[in-house]
Structures are given as C-alpha cells and as structure tokens.
Length: 234
Image 1 (cartoon, helix red, strand yellow):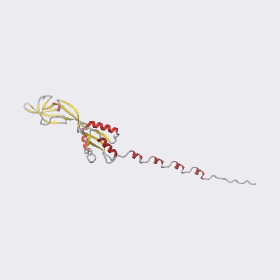
Image 2 (cartoon, one colour):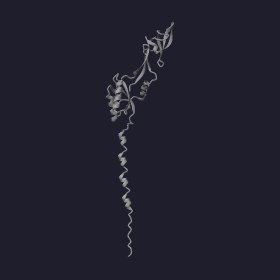
Image 3 (cartoon, helix red, strand yellow):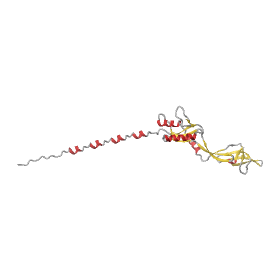
Image 4 (spheres, helix red, strand yellow):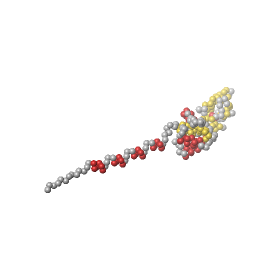
C-alpha cells in the first residue's frame, strides 16, 4: 500500500503576534501616566508669584520713646509668623553725634526721626492675602499708631531719593558735632595759650570740628582757630 502523505500543519503567522500584541506595553504603561501624576500647574499653585509687588519702604508712626520696642516686637512677630518673605527689615533711623559739654567730648547715638520707624517690605496690594496679613501684623503691634500716608487707600511708600538720604545720614563717615554756640555768640576759651580769654565766634568749620574766634589781644582783634572742645558759650 502506498504510504499516505500526512498533511504538514504549519504554525499560523499570527500566533506570536497574538501572544504579544504590539499594544500590550502601551496599554500597561500609558504615555499619559507621568503627566497626570505631576501636572504642570502643581508647582505654580504651591508658590504663587509675587513679581508684581515691588520691594518698598514704608514709615510707621509710633508712640514717642517706643521706637526700639516696636522694632524688636515686629522682628519677633515676623519670625513667629514666618513672614520674612513679605517684611524684610525694620529700621530705627539713628546717627552718631558728638556732644561737647564742660570741655569734654562724647559720642552719642541720636534718633534721626523720633516717633518713627522704617519698614522694608513688599508693597501693599488689594485682594492679596499675604499683603493683608502683613498689614494686620504691623498695625496690631504694640506701640504702632499708624502708617504715614495712610488714608482711604494703601499707605504711600518712601521715594528712592528719600531712602538714600536717610541711609546716608545713618552711615555718615564722620559723626555730627552738636554745639551750643553760633556765629556772633560770645564764648570763653577753656584751653590752650588763650585760656580764659573771651571772644566772639567769627566762623564755624563744622566739617573740621573747629571754630574761629576773634579775641582782643593788646587792643587788637586777633583771629584764633580752635577745636570745638576748647571753647564754651558765655
């Protein structure tokens, strides 16, 4: 008998493709998964932009003699409320002054504007939650009576030129000399060859700390240049 040919069964070409369809990986890890987990707006929502609010200086009116207390209290409250990104610094404007009294010179620190304190912060803006919080924090501080320029609208910040003038006075290279006499006044010389002579102030040289006095010497008016500390008002 002739051998019967067994039909050859070939594997279908689609078997492997069916087992591992091209869409399997894509279905398992869809391309949109990462984007959905970290949307582009997440960071912006967490840290709102403040670029539209300028960094400015405001002036606070305080009770007289409370300037330093207000400064310390404000700095403490700013730290407690973590408002350092809204309110940057609190300054009591002062300058060094040399006092001459009883022939002695001493340097003292004097307040430039008694009853006022400067605050550097982001400018106030309507309908801004952080701005409102900063306003209430400052206004509810003991010793603060008001913002200078405060009315129906937000307080008025200082101009750049005013800030520069104030800071310039605070950081002057030479302290200001306080004297109790002026041109035309009668003074007594307390030190040097002309001690106990009485003369008239002819010129003040504040930048040098000196005074020119006209003294009567042998019937003639003689100009004598002295330090402020060497004369006193009659």
